[in-house]
Length: 170
Image 1 (cartoon, rainbow, N blue to C red):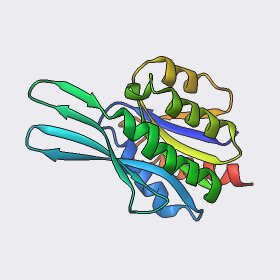
Image 2: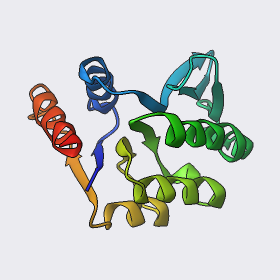
Image 3: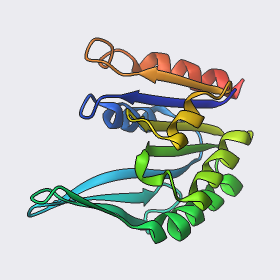
Image 4: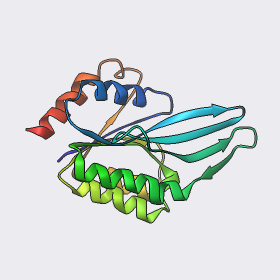
């Protein structure tokens, strides 16, 4: 077992914990992190490569006035696939930040995620606290550990997560 995911409500601190873990880990790191970028009444989600700082892809754009979401399917199908392919070949730890419902019907991407979960690589990710087939299939795997982040544990969960990752190495 070498797959670990954080989950919990929006804004609970999953990404902050993930960032703190990355500062403490002494492994080659691949995969991607997702950043929110605000432009007027738009909120963009941009996936940034951890293999190199040059690659970044807008994956979702939300019009907060109209409550409309656009998914950039091609970013998942080409850009993120390229990042994940490089990560499988060249890194020890693969970060999958913010897997959610938007990816549910992007088969080439979801297949790549399951390929990574089936690999010997250490995987650390964030699962959005929503339901869809993609997320449910990750949650029900026997080789996945899921830690729910809450207000009560978010300030002291870092050491537990680091211990689990260190256990994957040994």
